Amino acid sequence: MISQVAAVVGAGSPVGAPVQLPLQTLDPAVVTETPATVRAMVAFLASTFFGGFVLYRWGDRVSAAVEASASNLPLSAVYGVFAYGLLSFVVAYAYTQLASLGVGLAALTVAGGAVLGGGLLALGGIGFAVAGSYLADMAALGDPWLGLVGVGLVAAVAVLVLPLLLGVAVWFGIAAVGIGGTVRQWVHADAAERQAQ
Image (tube, rainbow, N blue to C red; front, side, top):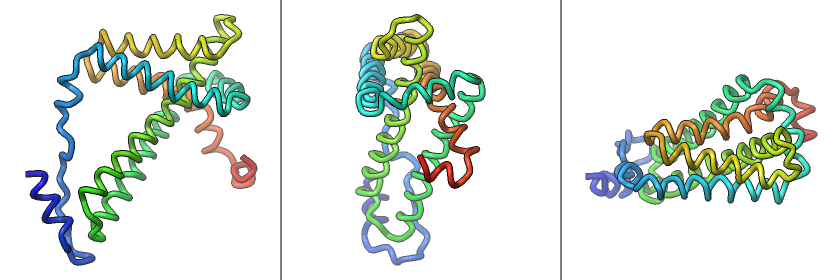
């Protein structure tokens, strides 16, 4: 069914004509039927790889993000969720606009999924780097890499032992707390401060 809709939509739809979009382009069973150990391993590798990249590339900026998030953890979580929601909205909006212009739906779905997945993982990496640095500071470890691995292990254990949706919520929740302080500062900064960053 999905391939039939993609073939019909991608083949010469006039510009401005209503386009039928498939509501399900990926079978959720791919994730739900994956063993919990594999999901936990993927969660650990994603958090440590992307968080490690952030620490490697922008390690000197992480301390300011730690201070921003640690100043108000519940509010940081709210602003972190806002960041995920904003990214998802922008990708979904661009997807629907390009689909209504007659762009090939199969290629658009793959590109949109890649952009959304990459964006969510990038935000997650920033969040885990900040949360790991915060953990390292609180435990007096001295090395943010140890904190990153510790937070990645906590998130992986949550994905392993909790039901799927709750485990995913914990993974994204940890990352949301990490990115929320910086997002809060950015949202409430004036235009001159944003351009300086």
